[in-house]
Image 1 (cartoon, rainbow, N blue to C red):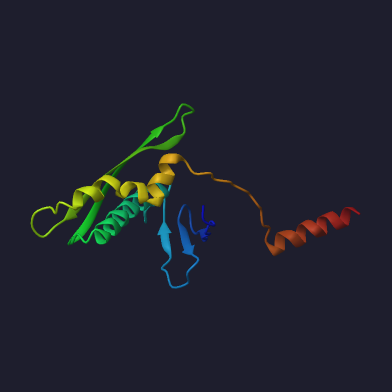
Image 2: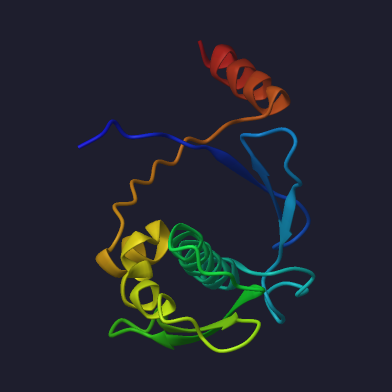
Length: 161
């Protein structure tokens, strides 16, 4: 197995439930997200929609790569993603399912070599196969106090002395 590669990004809260996602490449645009009403304002996609977009995008890229390798010309590939959000046994909302419909557009009849790619492309989609298998997610919470709050705490603790 090859050595693992790492990536990083930062998610930072703005007003309410709006967040800005900054990636490890400074040339990439910031993505702004927001939760739907009534929790947020719905001013951007929420994490559930980003998950659906990641799955659809990865599948489309995997199919495009396979078609390129097979020298099958395609005008464009569209992935339509429909998801469900439902409650689990504990009453918590979870992504219940994602349905992805791939729509490659060919100029003319569907090439015979397309069918082989249609059979294998999913297996090469990093995101879809990771989601299907479950991903280890380790979470740490590291509170950071502002300078003023830290000074007030130190002052209060020092005065007890």
